[in-house]
Length: 309
Length: 304
Image (cartoon, rainbow over all chains, first blue to last red; front, side, top):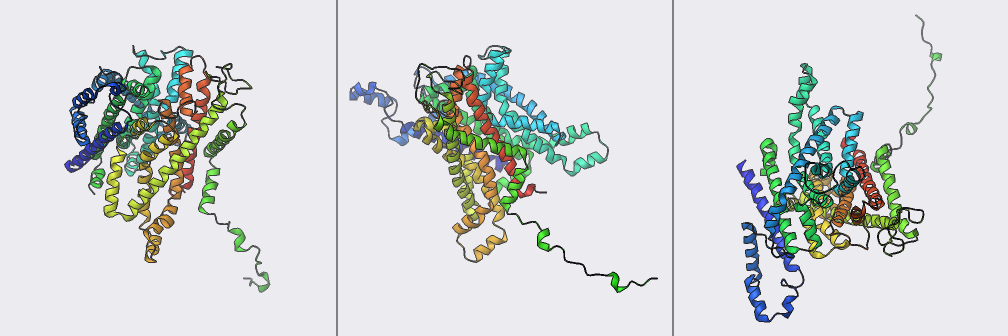
């Protein structure tokens, strides 16, 4: 097990390194001069001082090592558009809203998604199954950037049931959380249904049935426990779904979160902000994937074994 | 007891010949098509897709307007017989723009899926066929690429390469093939142990011939199913990028930037978001149900 964890950890570090390196070289590829138009009018001595101050007079590999060191220390640089703000400050300021939204939508999608999946499996090939799977299909086909504006337009504006945007009281949380949960519900429901159906055909369920155990008891204590295990494997894709979702949902509902920040830094071409936030998001996702692997290795010994091969 | 006399018997006449009882044998594809045809959901998906594709090709050709000319007298019109989907804030005809956008989206979907498949199938095929050290190294590379969040990588690639169709396709091709490669590898690992591969090898076929002529044709069914899942993914990818502003730039239309535009104006002109949204969702929904149907039709394991 320790060997397996170590191996996963090494992969995680390599992946992070690949991403940081990629962002460094992409920054180097940018045309123009880091000091903007003012540099053209500056006397060369001043320019040299400026370059020395930012370490740009050193060879590229030294700059690269310095950049790598800074990122490891948690220094992601200063905003390109607003030089008074550092990237880390922005993250500290706007990440809590995103995190809250993410957790709320995750809770919603776990409850709804698993319920749909369980109902579909228990009523296999009946109308409950078909309607649950149709809902799931719609959830997969209609992405958040379609759901979010429509919810905001109809529920928020036309019918006036809930506020169409902003981030103030609890009533502002509902619509964004639903919009963000839509796709995740679909993934979870499909996975849970398949997993439940697989478990239902196993021998120990037959045994439980034949010894006269009540259906409710079989479902809760025999089927659910085993059926829920494979769900752990899709934690990674779900995290991706939620994070990409927040980019869209926060922009549509004008929520002061990190996703909103990211999209606006793309529109203003704030390069340092874009790379900084990308590294931050990538780190979150990679850590989630790492944890997923570990948890799955813990619950299912077969994965550990094949991982060693 | 009565004797049974000979004249009670008569020779049975040969009324049918064996060939007429046996139905003509079906090829794999005929069989799959027969099964797909009986699946109403999947056929609906297929028909919707065909209609959408035809509209995407022909609607802009036969429209009186083109996608970029601005008619500043006709801004923000509601849908009517001249402008089926209304016009936008520059007086551009939305009917033309929506179908033009569909064309771009489908084009990107198809090209990206093709690249994805070519790279994925070859990578997976080579990795599985050679096995051993080659497989080991190639799988480690995949594991690293697999854990890089693709959409983020694509966003920074496009931000730095500059937006446009070419950047989107390149970004997708760099990042998208890993899933296909894994799928194909798994399938070929099973196939390569079978006798026909051994026979080909004994007869002296080169690895490239065995992979291309013997192994890949046997995973075609799987690949066809995979296409119906990759194309909508690529379309989603384009639209998502256009929505957050790094994809296709106006005046060029794409479903993503039409939806994004529509979202800004939706409060006063709901038609601007409704139509692109309907078209976009129908395309994705159709691809998904067609894909589910194809998987049932092509996968021999599902046969009863």
